[in-house]
Image (cartoon, rainbow, N blue to C red):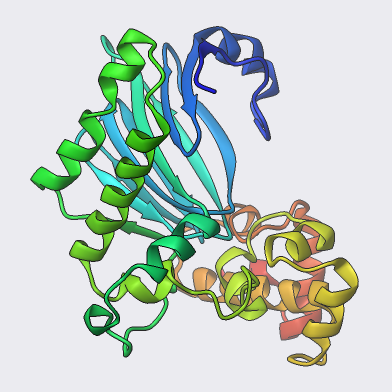
Length: 294
């Protein structure tokens, strides 16, 4: 069911003081797996739990996406592919005289499986490997990308519900946009070997700086907490929490050696909440206080 309305709540919004203003200035058009949003006035940031493969196209404003400590900035006309089962930070920034305005396509597993079953198998590059990066910026100034996303804008502007047949055609068009970008994306889009369960170490190496509970991490890797702990024990002698601490400390050591930031900045950048806790663990692990290296 499509609607144009002010959002009644912002999920996982970390700017609590901003929430009322955000709700008043965010307009969304949601129809199945096609989402169009406009945000006015000041910047808005939120954690995005990406459970499905997603294409996002920016019409106006600026979108800053942070994943694994790496920032990618989208400008009007840019399109990005966000791989499923990842947690990203999105910072949406309106322009001075124009709102933040984006179009999003989400590809469900059932839709992709149906699409895959109709593919000509001779066209599938079976030697391609699944994308490891959570985010990929697509080439700019492509007619197929612009045509796909701008064709849904009239529905938003006129408040009309597109038919299910039209929506499905847009989703199919979106998949072909990706496959025409890079044949390697076949492996990511049509990965059905395990039903949306992702590699634990791949996930942790991409997200160890985030402050997530074990329950959240287990959920993001599509496991129960008990299954997550059991699977993790097969790949490491450490507990998940100790593995994360070690990974953060190793990253901190590398950052300290570069001398570009203070110990305090590095402490928070790698995911620790408390400087004294970070310093104590660092000394226990490396035998030296981090402050002596700066």
